[in-house]
Image (cartoon, rainbow, N blue to C red; front, side, top):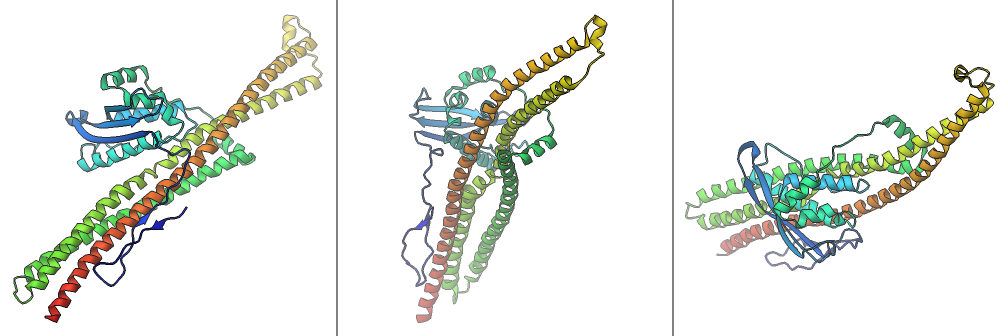
Length: 414
């Protein structure tokens, strides 16, 4: 996919101005918001002190069949969004559930933090709505549709289960991955996510420095404007100084707008991707646990088969069963029969687990392909927005200084 440019004309200088770009549309089967519009607005603080919280208005318009209402407006707090994400992860652990904006006890009442969180919560809902599987969750529908009393009852009836961690050797899983092509594929994906997380972290830090530099530029333009305002008391140069003051005021406004645009349209959405690798690895972890269970069953089966082989080859003349009046050969046959029964059960379980692994591998492969497609689409939009913000800033600065040059040229002619 490529980006195309719109045609603009130069108005204030012989130099050609930079041109705004338009991101190409990425066609996707699984990233569509068609038929579902979600907005998170109007944050309102409730309570005081440690018990204070902010509630957001969630407005939904839809014609999708899984919804009972075409329009709904509900109030939800951050804890409700957190509940929804945990429900989606528990309900569909094989899917990559989008991240939420981070928690913060210290900043939760700060207006800037609340606005940043509002944007992040809106992105979470829209990304979930664009997922062909997650968007059909009954919990997602309930979150968007139910009134406050109805949703409170729904929460009581659908509490998130406690997280039960399965105990198995990560070393064994790692060794298993090295021996399996399919598992190596997913192990490489985990490594890719780690590298991506590190790279995104560097971009976020670099953008923070760029943000600080832009703020310094705004302050410098403002201070320079005050300097020329003071010089404008001299009648001989008042016209030129006032022209500079006006132009510098435009520069300050342009840079401040640039800072806001970059923060809203680039920096904040980009910061979500520092959390995305953990979301991907969350789903990979589920798939890996299924694969490891399969391998554990196979290892147990091999052990039982070895037990039968040893029993069949053994010349058992004495056994513990002789205490109860059983002949050693009879005890041997019983042990073999028990092992064969266990093998039969293991074979059935392995067959079922093979199906589970096949499904898990297919789902994980589809999710990785989907998240790469989403990433391509969103990064295209982010970089286009950042580029256009730069273009708008440089165009405004260009016009401001071109105005100064024009005024000075006219002054010289007179």
